Structures are given as structure tokens and as C-alpha cells.
Amino acid sequence: MNSESIRIAPSILSADFSRLGEQVRAIEASGADLVHFDVMDHHYVPNLTFGPLVCEAIRPHVSIPIDVHLMVEQVDAMIPLFAKAGANFITFHPEASRHVDRTLGLIRDHGCKAGLVFNPATPLGFLDYTLEKLDMVLLMGVNPGFGGQKFIPGTLNKLRQVRSRIVRHLMQGGNPVLLEVDGGVNAENIADIARAGADTFVAGSAVFGAADADGGYQSVIRHLRERAIAAR
Ligand code: DX5
Ligand code: ZN
Image (cartoon, rainbow, N blue to C red):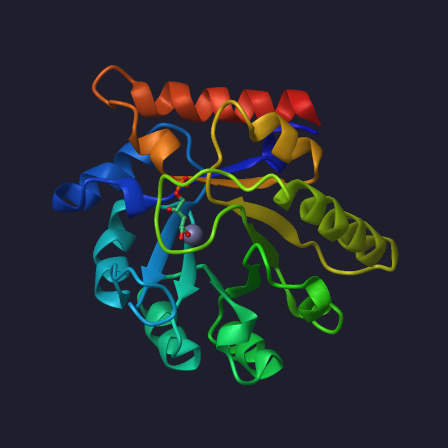
């Protein structure tokens, strides 16, 4: 595994919202590969965060891709708004969409990369007929809604299952698909998570919990990346 094939995606859910522009600039300067953007609507999950206007506001501050994770019930209505706001990836929870295939098409028609997100108890069957339409599979390491939760160990087995599906898909000439993990990722467990097959790692509290004043973000991101690379 070389360093390019590992991606670290700090989640701005744990950033200081009063200075978001500065915070996303800091993570890009510290080596982040993606900005992970957690959209919560207080219906699909209990929490309520930010929408397309905030995505549009941070867009000019970074050149790395914005990875929009929709934890909302009105998935289809949100897609054009986030595409217009500068999202690069849009992922959604398949059980929140009435027509998963149509929603994936909608994301791609709007020029974004598409992904499905699986909660800890969501079965992987949604991958059976969708893998060729996906750019990313996102496995939740926690139940969605809040940062700072503890990683659920059963996610490792699920990651291995998705990794073998992706390997099979690639052997059959399929398009590349990123395997992202979100929730509870930190320097202690990232090696196990990487070994189980993840290549893209969301980290909220692990990154923004560090003080940036003394290069804190940079050293956390470097450390996470090094541990992930060494594990694979
Ligand atoms: C949880 C969010 C995560 C969250 C991760 O619903 O989707 O992206 O920000 O936060 P940590 O890394 O603190 O678990
Ligand atoms: Zn997320």
C-alpha cells in the first residue's frame, strides 16, 4: 500500500464552527485528502448540523474534494443543492432512499461521485446490484448522529466482506471503488481498520481534538496515515 492509496478525511463535525473557513484551510495545509461534511436533518438522525449554504461557504477555502455524507430523509431533494454547492462525493444511507438506483444516477448526473453508507446493522445486500454505479462504499463504525463515539468492533468483519466484494468486482474489470470508514477512528485502531480493508478514513474528534497551534493537525494526520500504511 503506498501513501497515495490511503486517504484521511477529517470530519468538520468536530471543528470550531465559528471559524470554519480557517479550520478547513488548516486541515488541507496539514495533509488532509478530503473534507468530510456530515449533513444531519434531525429526522434520519437526532442531531442537526449544516446544509448546502455552509458547503458553498467553505468551498473556496479548499481545493481538496468535499465528501458530503447525507444523514437525511429527503435524500433526492438534497443532491442538486449539494452538487451546486461544490460537493465532490455525495454518499447516502440506502434505507433513506425510496429508489436507490435512481438516487445514485441523480448524484452522477449532477457530476458528483456517488457512495452508499451502511450503518452497523444495515446488511450489505444493497451492494448486490449497485457496485458498478458506486465510487465509494462507506461503513459506519458507530451509529450515525454524533462525533466522539466508540468504534464498534464488528465493523472490522464487515470491512473484510466489502473488501472481498470490491476485489472480485475489480477482477471482473469493474470501476475503482473507495472503501471508507466513519466513526470512532483513532491512532490506536486505524491499523486494524486498514488491515480489514479500508483505504479512506474519516476522523473527527481524533483530528480536531488536537490543538493546531503547534502543528497538531499535521502530526495527527501524518500519524494516522503512517499507521494505516504500515498496517497494509
Ligand atoms: C457520525 C459522523 C462522523 C463523525 C465522526 O454520524 O458521520 O463523520 O463526525 O466523528 P469521530 O471521528 O469523532 O467518531
Ligand atoms: Zn460522516
